[in-house]
Image: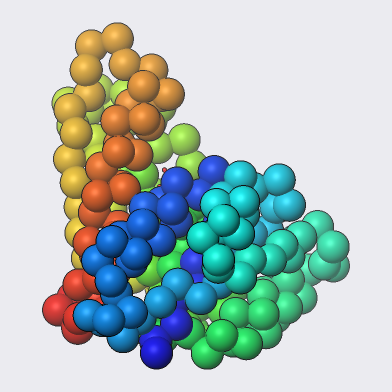
Length: 194
Ligand code: GAR
């Protein structure tokens, strides 16, 4: 069985969408793959309860308990590698990863970013899209490389920016699309099609 490890920091709604897709699409049967663990760098991440309720191993690794980014990433890698993952999925994991971490999972590390990359890498993507007068915004699933929010694009979804949108209303519209494209992209990736 190919293991998927998902990293979260907050609500974990993308993680939940992937777990539901794995259950409903019977990934264990059809793709020989399962979500084997959910790891969070924040104890208060709401997604941990969802993982627990779905019988998935879950664990908190608080980055504030480590002296350096390198120390945290080394501990995180050790925790992830206990599951010998075929795929590591970043789902709202709000940490910049060290080059060593990214190199270790090269070719099996995916992320979802709430913009139409290469536009708006980094934070505050929705406000920046509104401020720029964009008529469209969206989300991107991509392979992770050492450069922030870069790497081969696997899937994108586009939504309109509507008059009166705030960062919050636009984020909510984009998030509904993330929940569609991320599970699809993970499944296609596992099929070897992406
Ligand atoms: C999502 O919108 C995701 O694209 C974004 O955080 C949100 C997490 O939501 N990720 C980033 O901004 C990464 N830089 P979730 O925890 O409900 O999946």
